[in-house]
Structures are given as structure tokens and as C-alpha cells.
Image (cartoon, rainbow, N blue to C red):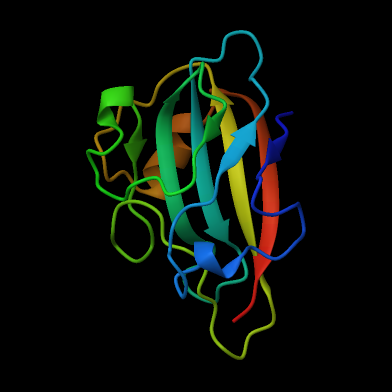
Length: 156
């Protein structure tokens, strides 16, 4: 199991507004423990299972994170090619854009939970930028060595 943490919020706590779509809409800093022997890459999926449609609502997909990377700084650029020099790629969120889309639950909803899931894989996925959650989940099948989840909440 991977331990996933953020310097911006603790597990189960409110995600600061600056990381929401109502704020600066920048990704929070994240770090995780190193994957087990054989880890070739990591995948990060941020989603909101409390969203009505689609559920879960995908806020961020990041894949082919190199095995020696165990954290991300805040404010990862949304551009498809922004991380290609490091070998990382970003997928398409459920707003139809590439990169991070911060929490933005409906105004009258209770707080939604946002899951920042990290998966250690025994391979790279090698999709070009813009892959979907369904494509990533299918490609990960049988290749996950370990995973971890950080859950934060947000209410407007």
C-alpha cells in the first residue's frame, strides 16, 4: 500500500479553496511513498464519486509518472505537453480538457469527497496526452503493484 499525503490538507479535511475551480484552480502538492520493487511508473487519478453524473467525475489524470518521482509540486500546468519532457502525460478530465480541474460541487450539495489515488505499475502506459479514465483503467488491469488514496473534502 502507498501512503499519499499533501502539505495543503490532511486526510479527511477540507481542500483549501485556492485548489478549487472557484479559487486559483491549481493542483495541490502531493507526495507518496515509493512503490514496491518492480515499479516502473505511477498513475494519479483524482475523482469525485459524489458527483451525480458522470460518477465518478474525473478531475485529473496523470500517467507515466517515472518510478523515481514520489511527489508533485502544486500548480502542475494543464497543457498537454507541459510534462512530456519528464515522460509524464495528462489525461482528459470530465470537463473535456486536459489537466487538473479543481473541486466544484453544486452550491447546495453537502461536502463532496475528492479521491487522489496513486497506483504503482510494473509498466508504463505509453498513451499520448489526452487518454480517458476508461482507457487508463483498462491498461492498468493486471499491472498494479500497489495503490494509495488521499481523500479531501470540498463544499461551496
